[in-house]
Length: 209
Image (cartoon, rainbow, N blue to C red; front, side, top):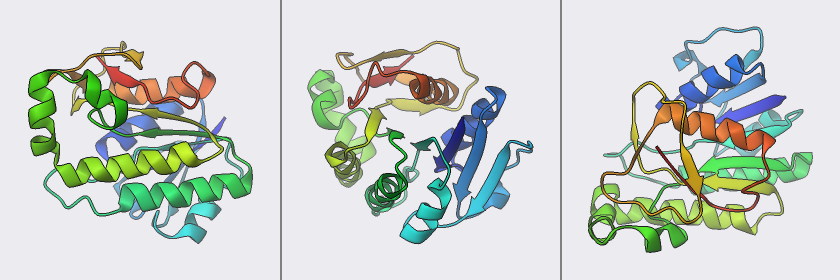
């Protein structure tokens, strides 16, 4: 399957590229600086571009069968509108190219997942992540939900840069707290698993270790 990955140079994105190649997929990594991708495979193609450039995004999705977005801005940096505006451009491009499947990442604490946070997490998560960052993720989700694509949004908790466990829990009713966590490699596994699954079609499940 041909997969186009947005946010491919982040820690989650690199893990996603690696695992997608290990599974035998053909992968196009869309990035502002493809030089940051230290992977080599005859099934890996890189394309330089900015997700805020709609024409460049349209070029990236041409011929793809599925798109996965792990767009984000590191903690400590202003969230800006990369997630929301970038998602808007991706959805417009996928719709025009008639590529139906779109899988993306948001965060626990957005939407109805907030209701399943522990009392402590509900109080402190906006301070840790940032209220503006949560609003940007909420807008990203809203743009996706309004689309007619076959979308799935995964909401992870705090991410750890550790080797994958090979296991994760995925559900729309998972309760989470301040200690809930997920290895990035397991997030990448969960995202790729959704490509062959319709269990959470047009849903926003949480994903945790």
